[in-house]
Image 1 (spheres, rainbow, N blue to C red):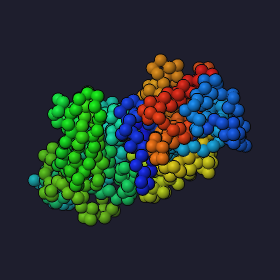
Image 2: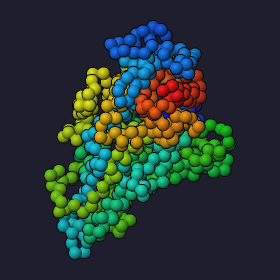
Image 3: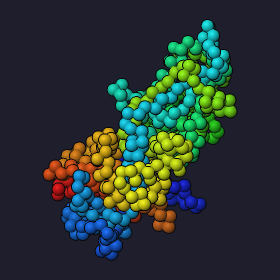
Length: 553
């Protein structure tokens, strides 16, 4: 089940109170709420089927296996529009096509485009290098008579998820979705590991005291507010403060812990423990900069709850965290550890020299970043891929990065005119493409040298990532299909109900015959009655469709 790929609607319009987030908070305490992750479009009338015919030969919907027809013709989908495309991976022979040429709202299947374009641009072995430079001389006593400058490189994890065996760690429901999903958990890795690595190198370079200041050079590209986060060249712990709430005895205050622990933030807890079965209601607010308030109630049977706070000024926090890391290595700094990052004091960008570099942190290979993005449907990092695409071609704007996806599609033989994209994660209503187009993308990628890395990065149905529970542990397709999914839910204000805008899943399956296939299954426009139960059912039904494709071929 794709439990981590959350695609909220764009900023709510004035007066729109029944939003997707509202719906989640009303009913999002169960497994199905955690499954909000894919995109699709559905419509099963004969008129819609006829309208789907175009220049490409298609198989009539009647040719679909009975198990699939039974699902798409069910009463819950009476308003819906379905798009299904199944093809032979090697030859492109169309096996099933229902409205396959129509464009659907894409949600997080958009990450198939941004992820593959970035993997092509950087290659799987690319490593980000984040250096620290000294500005000034070091005395015999170890005093740096000047500043230390960390130059942000766009490293998405800065060592904060690195495992001892050389992978980037993730959990089934990542902390980036903790405010929407009560089942999110934290990795066990130290989010400050990269900064500690830099601090050790600074100390090893003979610096014991910084006489002036420490600063972060985040001029790689202009920071940009996007959805509920900030895209920036510096990333420490996804620029989030993790808050872990643990219930106490009924009537007593809950315990609140947070990471990273830093002087930059004061956390105040006002969460009461209530009886088992009562409503979970915890909010995170920031009354003023540097203060986080966690308030509400948590049932005693809720083992633990993770919430997060988005950092308002990532370079300023990174500066504080680096000063604190230096302190753990015995390096003191004359400047106060908290406060703004002194960007106006940064040296000219051409003044950094190899002789003045005192530390550098090297990331794990870029293939690990792509795996994290696809396995967890990491929205922030998927949007960061757009800036990385721009940088790889000497540009610094989000728009320039989007145009590089256009160029990539042309290079691999796809028609960019068939695709509409406005971001890297799939959160815009202009993120549109057809099931046939995404199948064409998957087929094209299968011929490229980076394909083994790309396919390994995708969640495996019934095995890992966001698709762990899309099929059961005993499903015949378990471990034989990999896919990216996405879900967008919005609010039907007039009817006071949630509306599944799209649920989509696309990927590869090795059929029962051994034949290698691509598949894309999209459904749009499904009114929901019971948010959690209905979404859970839709995800499982898409899993059943993939099982039928597997069994029939």
